[in-house]
Length: 451
Ligand code: C2E
Ligand code: MG
Ligand code: MG
Image (cartoon, rainbow, N blue to C red):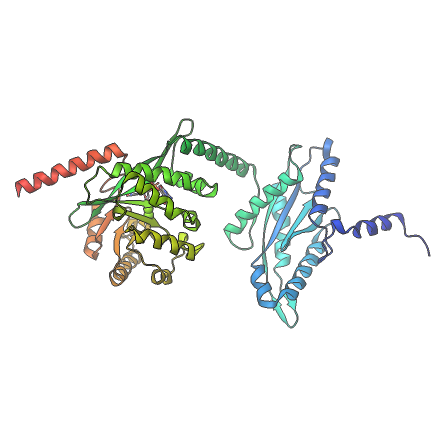
């Protein structure tokens, strides 16, 4: 038998190398992917030209697996692999690096735009139907790409960036391609900076509760306050909770931050008249943490604040991640008399079914509806419907974000009992809140004396 030509021999040896091959699809695996990148970086040592890599993840592959069975799932993965391999030019490589995750290397793609275009093409190729026995299945895929610009980058760094971009693509919806850009890199650095500053601030007790009045719309009497966290960093200046709360949630700082703010808030609220309640926001991630209930109760015990004066605000998102865990925490809190409100109602992935499973004492109508109540008929109808529903279910209602007298009047007309917004007062620190209470208290005494 003739010996195989040298080139063919290398290919065969290469392919038989199990450690570098994905058994199901015959594509290279993660090791092959990194090996290819390392070699390319070495080759490009004296050449400043960038190159691109990408990761592609099938959308909703798991349901397909469940629906058609594992064997069919494997069959689809093989077809996906075949299509991707056929789409590669002679320089490019595609590998399988996870169950339904593929990674590719484009040595001759030099720009973010070109990477996006090439990857879009792959996604299009994957969108054609797949034959599974006598049936057909459809799939979409999302992808994230990153470019090699400097020697500081390794295969791992590049893959991390592409995964970050993929994560963003998945959040945008199905079938999206996101390229990790230099702006994203800057944004990631900013987030890390804020995270570090926030960790320090929480440890040093520098996050403060502010309080915003919640009023009875008819009498305009203050009935309670919502606690809102405020943080001013030495270098960054004031940072909005819209920015630091999501970072605290994502980076695991929300627990300690929340405990600090609750401790300070209940200490401040002890000096208020006893008929005023204190409302406090809980983040979704706190409703999957079994310690949350105990932590809240232990703070109330330490500060001597009556649990029956405390309300907890949670959002629909908070109930979705792990409804059973949320239910347990909420039950623990209600057992000692803490009341529970559903915050920002109408903006999340609202499910009216949830209102049957969970009992809420109060519902807060999101300010988006209040903002358009005067100009927009649909908002008016939605608010009326929410109010009727709350009445039926025995829940109190507070409309958020009331800025104008006309909005307050319209809401009162519709029978909304509670209101909150800049019209009645902006969030203030503990001292200013005490001042506000003295002032409104004196006014009440004056009113009583003159009537
Ligand atoms: P939220 O719980 O819905 O709080 C209401 C937000 O609306 C607050 O924003 C408040 O300042 C703002 N607001 C009140 N009245 C008006 C108004 O008339 N017009 C307008 N345009 N806005 C008004 P803030 O303080 O920036 O807080 C944003 C979000 O951050 C809060 O939304 C809450 O989800 C979260 N948050 C704040 N403090 C905490 C905290 O201690 N723990 C947790 N987990 N989340 C918090
Ligand atoms: Mg709230
Ligand atoms: Mg709200």
